[in-house]
Length: 208
Image (tube, rainbow, N blue to C red):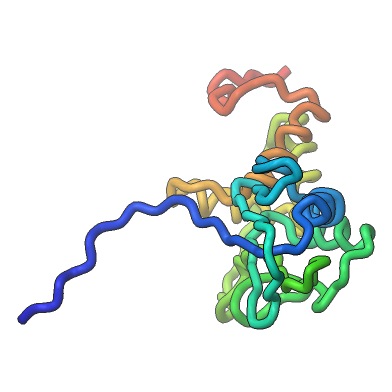
């Protein structure tokens, strides 16, 4: 008798659910201390709530907390900024930020009901060093675009050359290197430097 094969399953959402003794207090902690947003509440007073971090929603349900052996991990765009926000709000830090051998830069905290929460961002420099030889390539960029690139490289803690290499390599693969957090920051940089043209504008650039 042959074993049945697993069906093709489409699954785009997953909701962790934590039992808490006080839903209202948990909502306040997650939104004010951890940086989550309130998605919904159910009941008055609430017996259930949904809190979101980016596009990920987690449920908080009225019940007896059971933190032993339970942890929830969130992959974010910028772990360092979130860590500083939570640390400044007095959150109980279990492990400070650091680059881990499993390819993430992360940290861990404990919430007010004892649950362990991890927050990390992908490390794209994981793997063995790749020895290369660099060549000087004369590059002239539109002035405002060059200013944005300098700021973006500083924001991503990269050299200007590394930032250009990252962008070029991802473009050649047909994908973008930037997280949603990066893209929001890029929009702010475009406003800062007065960039009012779109991605096709380079075809119309004419030097003064």
